[in-house]
Amino acid sequence: MIIDWKKISEKIYEKLKDDVSQITWEKPTLWAILVWENSASLRYIRQKRKWAEFVWMNFELKQFDEKVSEEELLEFIASWNKNRSISWYIVQLPVPQHINSTKLLRTISPDKDVDWFHPENQWKILIWDTSGFAPCTPYWVMWIFKKLNIDLIGKKIVVIGRSNIVWKPITAMLINRWATVTCCNSQTPDITEFTKMSDIVICAAWQPWLLKLEDINDDTIVIDVWFTVIEGKIYWDAEFDNIHANWNLITPVPGWVWRLTVANLLKNTLKAYKIWNM
Ligand code: GUN
Image (cartoon, rainbow, N blue to C red):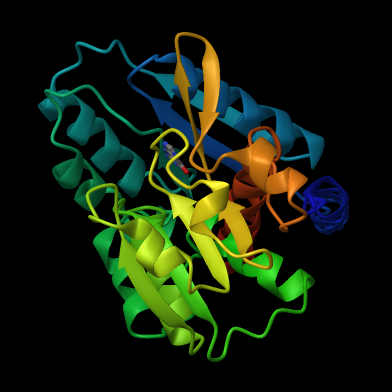
C-alpha cells in the first residue's frame, strides 16, 4: 500500500500558507545560493521557488559561475552573514569539487542555516536539543511515523545509507525516540540478515534496487527516501513495484519527496522569521 503523502502534504502547505498570510508586514524571503547548475540541483531550486511562492513567501536566488573560486564564494557567504536584511539562506549542494564543502558549511552562520547544515545545528540532534532548526528530509520521515500512529519505542528499524544530511540525522532521531536501530550501508555483506528481522526499513543509500521483496517480511514498512537516475531511467533504493504489490506499506518516490523536504525548509524559514521579527 502506498503511504498517501500527497494528502498530508497538502494539509501541511495549507497550514504554512495560513501562517504566512497572518503576517501583516513584509513577507519572509528565502534566499538561496546556487553554484553548480546540475539538473538535480536545478530541479530542487525550482521546487523551492515554486513551493515558497505557493505559501506566499518570496524566493531570491544568487547564482555563481561554477568556476567561482572558493575564496570568493566564502567571502560572499560571510557578507550575507553580516547583512541584516538577509536573515536566513541556503546553499544548494553539491558544489563543484574545487570548493571544500565542509569549509563552506562551517562558513554559514548557524542562526541563518535553515537547511540545518552547520555542524553546530547538526550537533544538537545528537544531544536531544530541540532549539535549533530541523533537518528537512529526516523530519518528514518522523512525520510519517506520527501520522501513521506508529510508536517507535522498541521497534526494530534498519537504516541503510551513510550520508550526513539524511542517514545520520535519521539514525540519531530514531535513537532519541527509543527505537532499536541497526545501521547498514551498501557494503554490508548480508543486508537481508538484518532487514528480515525488522519492523521498518529506511532506505537512504542512493543504490538502485538495493532492497528487494525477499529481503523483508510481509508487514515490514518501507520508507524509501530517494532515487537514482541512470540514462534517464529512475531507480528507487527499494524495488517499489514488487514491494508495493505485496501490500507492504511503502512511500512513493519521486515527486512527493521534494514536496515534504521543501515543506520543512519553509517551516524552518518561518521559524527563523519569527525569531528575527517577533
Ligand atoms: N542537495 C540535496 N538535498 C539538499 C537539501 O536538502 N538542501 C540543499 N541545500 N542542498 C541539497
